[in-house]
Length: 200
Image (cartoon, rainbow, N blue to C red; front, top):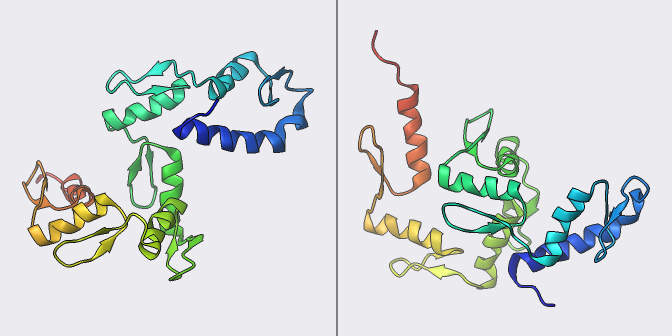
């Protein structure tokens, strides 16, 4: 059976993991997957794992109905709707909904940039950012500004760039009504109000 999208990608990664780790702990892990031979210590973990193969997604988001194979994945997803960001950077207080995003962010402070563009030597802290950047060099899926012909790698970057020309500032502060062209600038600005102390 051919599987599309993220499920197919999960199976590809999962298969590579199985080939390297399945037989190492078979005595401690008596519950074995009949499809990929990976072993687990509990039957409930095996059942969760088997959803990768079956495509079963029994957990649905109450807001947008997106379905997930594990309850934990659904709960993490729901932070998009609630705005909950429980992982915050100790250096700059920027908050994230996922721990992995915090870890990636912390590379900015440490200066760790492990991903280098082979064409221009620009360094990135995240592999996804490098891959997006490389579209500029390859000409694949790049977007060009109709006003100044600047090429950017994503549609979102083009929309943000166009605001330079249009002067559009769709993000405004609820406290002082100052407007911004980018949501990250608004978030940075709002910290000013958080640090304000009432006159005593």
